[in-house]
Image (cartoon, rainbow, N blue to C red):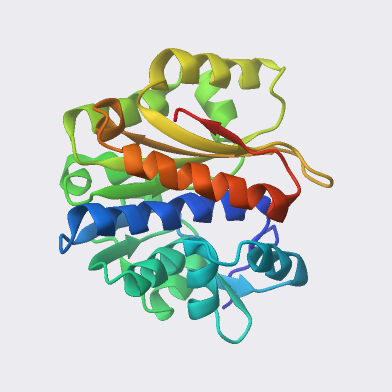
Length: 265
């Protein structure tokens, strides 16, 4: 794979993100039986990376979780699976029928994603902008959308009056079966950007979302947070998913040597 990320795959941010994705897919299978899960990952990144010792140790402590099971089954030969391949492996393990389409603005990433066996989002997203997944011709095709942008997401939201969060809220409000996961990096909870995020979340996403947050650790610039937003959460249809996430957080705390924060459950 020619496209390299700027960080080591399997870091604490990946663990909470992929833990939530894994539990969601398992919950979907338990809840919807034979219904196909249609997923879009427009910020696809790397299909997989090398399974380094820190990530290997974390997965060892997480033994028995849906995440660890899928990474072990799918990562034979020392790979740590990226988001879409991780979801694909969980679906295989849980006998969930799934259709995943991916994209990325980076041409090397697109090539690697395609060569790894994943289907590309068609037609190609205008301007290779992952947020264009909400354009009318795309958004109705999916049950689950993962937004995994780089670190400027919250800064841009603060500057633009939370425009993308508002778009996400509108999408899940009009599409009762849609789930949107958003991965955010929060550099400073006490600066304007961090306070804006916290204020928006409490005022506009409370009751609509679950999230897992990992506070800054040694050698990290950010708090990591993965959010799952859906009208189904608002309508109290996700009790068993909430219970799954609670169990995962209990197991993940010692794996990351951190006190994870579970919000919205």
